[in-house]
Image 1: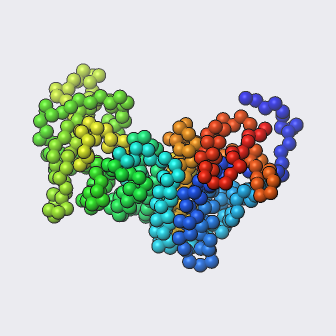
Image 2: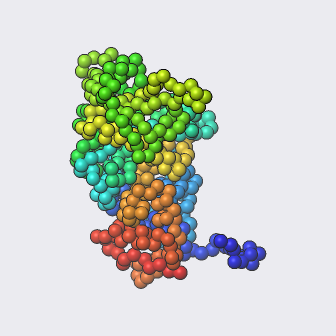
Image 3: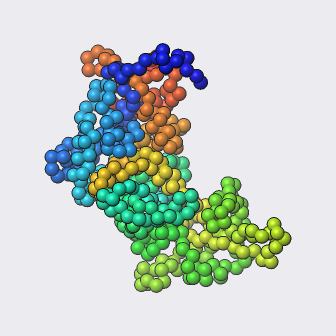
Length: 473
């Protein structure tokens, strides 16, 4: 591609009052209204004059994040061109910042409840979780969000992984509960913002209870399997899953008790497995496609009281350790193995349960997607403001996910950055059409015209509408 006109012969001016750059916000925010965002946000009541009109301000923050804002100043993108002709109640970034800073921890809890109910409303408006009446997965994990400056409340050094290596990073810790099915992309059901030095399992039991209840509210009427890594391997977490009526699948730390149990597995009990796609093994530093799997019964947390112990299946995967000196002629006398164990009460057969647990890695994709959007920054120095920002970021991510599902199969499982680029960030010219009506004229030949129109049509179904806007040159 090349320019047809030199810059010396080209002019540019920001002078068109009829243009908007994010026309996709129209059907997306209509979807948010249909899912009950305004009514739910009205139940969040921060004190003081800055906390007035919470429904409008939360909707502004969610819309800005959906359009790509990752800081409070970025919310100004809602006030350009003809946006005031399409949306009412848009607030200035300074007003939205003051609103966030007026939050107490109780207000954050109110917002978390609104977020969970909003997800349920989205599930009623769009098929977000197909197959949830049969099987659903809940993934619990934490991520360390790097922050800068010395005035960030709660910012401390905590462990995170960069390039498969554990390093200390100064930041705030986000605990998340993710719901998915074998047929769907994941959605964010629950969030907790914690201090940067928080252990993985801190507050996890309560979040698990909330997430399972939210999953039921979203139509997960079948089996629910909660997947966790070794940071959550403790009795309160596992018992919280059992109390909520779900199945658990948690990675086990390789302590002496687990190693002793693995040593009792007879050699003929191991089943060879060849994965269709190789998996990355951090210990070996390479790709692995061959392994062996076996299981035994195991009682965990034996140092606790009798009622705090849990007896379940210990599913063990073993992989041959690499013999780095084999090329020098030093062949091995007998194979050395590395073991990975999972404690689960899953009703599925051994190989299927082990494969399902490895899919817990989907949570890393969610965090990467989240951090590439509204959680690229923690915008405030106040902890509660950042906690509220995190919850609204989850609402925005789920809203984009629902919009992608309604737009069609090409975007149903796409990253939210792709949905934002193809559906939200499309320019349109506004024009009046009779009394009280407005038309949006979008670019001719837009590569996602079909998906954009599908979202518009499905969102407008059942409401007074003149139909989807016609594309115009």
